[in-house]
Length: 366
Image (cartoon, rainbow, N blue to C red):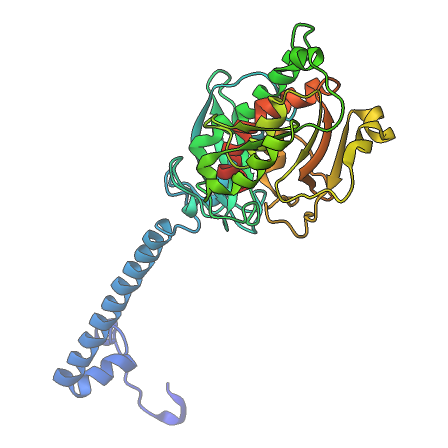
């Protein structure tokens, strides 16, 4: 019996509602046509946003694959993998005099104005491309015989102070220079080796200062400027003229040519703009000359102020296979040398001079 005697209708299972009406169903049923359209629009908007988001993610991934700052242009591999590969490339060992057959791979660009800086492969160049003086990096070459890869011609931003045609295709000549220099030094040590004109000079020894004026007509703006000296030579028997015709002996190389082919054993070499203020004969009997066979003077230039770019980062040190020397440059316009007692040094200088002049224009800018 229900409480208070109230009658209560008992519902049978057949009369029970399946689900009570929900809030959203009631909301739609209140204004069915309009609200169904709004619901459909909401669903379509959500689908469009989902598709757009998926497309954006795919586009971002594709763009990142084309980003040159993190991808090697040629290999299409991440820069981290390239850096690991770059660490495997060794410097060419110093002191090597064994000829190598080298194949140029490419110019490898670096950041930080140092060949040891982080790689930037997007600025790599082929072997024939001229590299500007303000870039840093190195030339990667392969030893054809051993398969080893080496870093050569390592360039800082200040390695070149002049705009010279720096190309990695010259790496073979650059590396072979040290081999030629060593071969010349060894040749000079042989007992049979003699400099030109040494025997003749011993047979025709003369006392006092004898002057020979070496010149190249093609480097003189006015050949008639020699006429006053020629008139003086006709009055004095100790002045002669020697024309330089060797096509390689130009500019600075002409100095080495004159010393090497001199008919004197003991040479005082002076540039045309060097004027002695007293009789220089005493230099040949000075203790310094007697002991070492040569006298050199410091030049005005030094690594912190150099017109030839001979600073700590100059390519000359790698070319000559020697460490950086922090001192004043040598004055090439005045020197005293005994050609008999310094054969090895002069033969090396002669062998390197013509080649050095050519590579200096390419690698040093001197």
